[in-house]
Image (tube, rainbow, N blue to C red; front, side):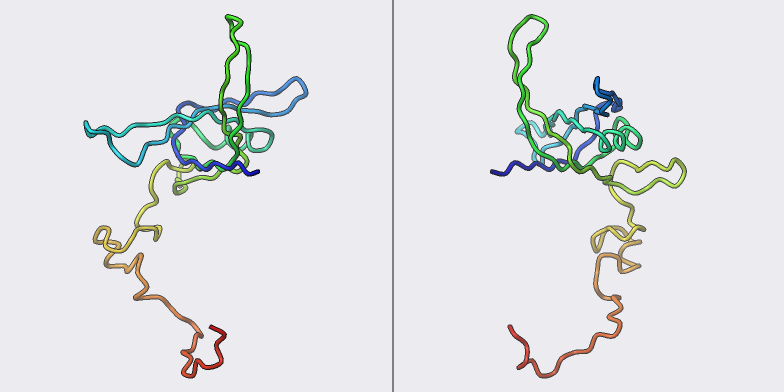
Length: 160
């Protein structure tokens, strides 16, 4: 069996580091993920996912991520049951974070990663996005240095 989930979204609150009675680091937080389409009123809907991270992942998240930061989470989906204040049995689905990544560029002043898209100057923009990208040839292969590659004239020896 295989259970894997990958999401990219924004933290809805600052994550807080806690410790279990056996001194294991843990944090739980929510991530807002926009849907890729709009409804009939032109509104973009958002899904909210509960995420739990343990040990080193929990410490990493609490150290480098804040409310509103964009985060990429790779993990597994788990269901658990608990008894609420009223004594009723509740069931919840949570993403258990196994790998966490930044999704923006590093801010020079704060040392934290910006939430959002990489800048054009970072070389991540598709061809034709803005005049800077077009002038610099960013996103195209026109100015690519091929180094020591040589063109093969006789391709009879190639296995495909």
